[in-house]
Image 1 (tube, rainbow, N blue to C red):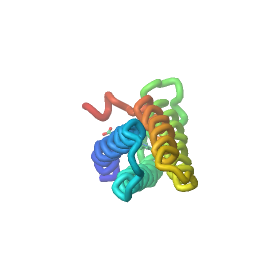
Image 2 (cartoon, helix red, strand yellow; image 1 turned 60 degrees about the horizontal axis):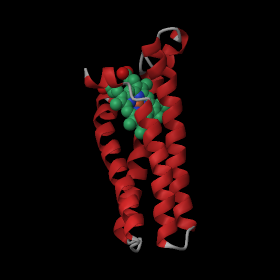
Image 3 (cartoon, rainbow, N blue to C red; image 1 turned 120 degrees about the vertical axis):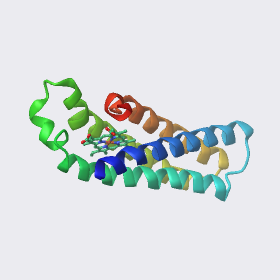
Length: 138
Ligand code: HEM
């Protein structure tokens, strides 16, 4: 059940992160004000990523190709789900969280869009780089 929650939530996490990144860069290029709508989009992306992180941690402990897979590092598919995917995703979510807290300290709308845009993009790219695509799409 956890695997299916993690697998389905992944679509939502990626969708809201892409939306938050596009919204931040559009806001930046249009030089418009950072409104409560922009805040909500960024906050939803942050919350979804954190929920996915919690589900992922429990899944890692429970799944046979999570923690248990650490003893089979010579198998690249197992190494991906057991180590690379969790580790890189944790770093990605830390970056997204840093972006969120840095945007709050910015006074200008331009600064807020920039912090969300840069940190969320870095997080998104890291997440995309270590998704177990073959398992997911199977
Ligand atoms: C935003 C962050 C994340 C996204 C988008 C994501 C996405 C995914 C996707 C799409 C799969 C493949 C699911 C399938 O085979 O149907 C997967 C598998 C997995 N993820 Fe994540 N994940 C994230 C974070 C994490 C974190 C932080 C951990 C652990 C600390 C984790 C642990 C796992 C494990 C152990 C599996 C393999 C589960 C199994 O097949 O038994 N994930 N993840």
